[in-house]
Length: 467
Ligand SMILES: C=C(O[C@@H]1C=C(C(=O)O)C=C[C@H]1O)C(=O)O
Image 1 (cartoon, rainbow, N blue to C red):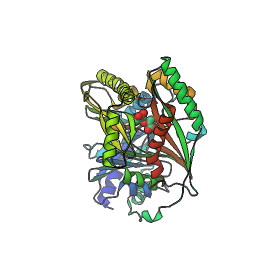
Image 2: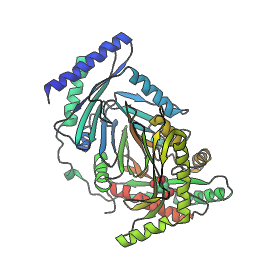
Image 3: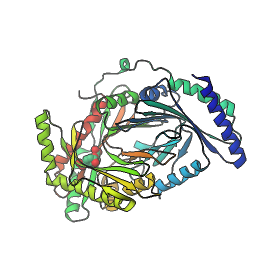
Image 4: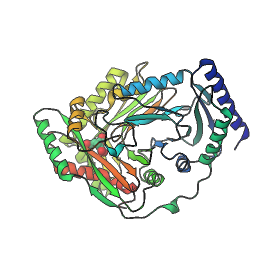
């Protein structure tokens, strides 16, 4: 521990308290320092196991950025109507008077809002997701940002005129020491145990797919994405860090995430980006249309080629391209997309993929993109409102945060939201896995069922099954 750095955080808190007195309001104070001695994001996450259980979050972009948050300095949730913009407005109000110290140039440092939104706020809540609000973004009290090989730690706190600064400071330094201490070897702790896998309401799901096909043929809608759940149990409780570690090991190029609330954790490794914003530079992607990976390179290539030429999958994909392009044309200039989809290969599955880049019009925020894009027809359908209503009325379980925007935004407005698929909600010794697929006029229920089985494999592996 470097003494001068500790004193800097104390000074920041004192300044925050003075400003809170002057303005008679709560002030968000944050302080970022570059870490000389590194603690990996997974160690940081694991170190928070006792003190921060239920308020930890992990998010990796699968490239060069990992964020790990512990504790909540501030929490933002909103009702059903205009929820994305309501969270954004509250966040902007906080930022107006926030005191931000330390290095301000690095993306994903300083006060960062991390969290997500449920798939459909109008869907009735069930006990499955009882630990998760419809939407919730938090500014972590401690945020570890790994950017390439640089590590930054951001402290954040809300202070008011009454805050006992010395006490808060002492408590935070104690927790900081705990979070950044050397982690014991975890791999020994891995539990090899057999899993019990149940496919829930399989027959009923096949009927729902058939009903969707009938409605699509009647032209009630063009496409709808239907999902189902599998329940995976074992004798002993699942361990969030262990699952994250396996995802990180086997699917390091996907967005890897974990959000803990109460004694539940929503975990996954998704290939799908909803939106990334750096300054005015925007990146999004259309990912729809799926086939298995081959057992040999040759088979893999053949399957890929079949997918690239399959009319049903191309049509499913095009629906997504049309909708996302339309949103991009409205909110951006210089929209670029390749003329035809390419393949995106992940563990066990390959997809049709069209990346889109653009330059955002001035004043268009990351939240505005989230608001307009979610759900794309890769997770909802087309037309959006009809498909989401159809899902609400016909799917037999609550999606909760599955298929929803999950990510972060910093005080500069930069950030990224992934689409939370290939995921599971883990609670004790039970994991609920979510898998879905796009249904169009010529969908065959049994092939769709097989597609969802294939999509469940990576998560089952991460829970300790298969391999
Ligand atoms: C809905 C899921 O995946 C989505 C549906 C796809 C499809 O229908 O081909 C492909 C990728 C995702 O956009 C899921 O994995 O649960």
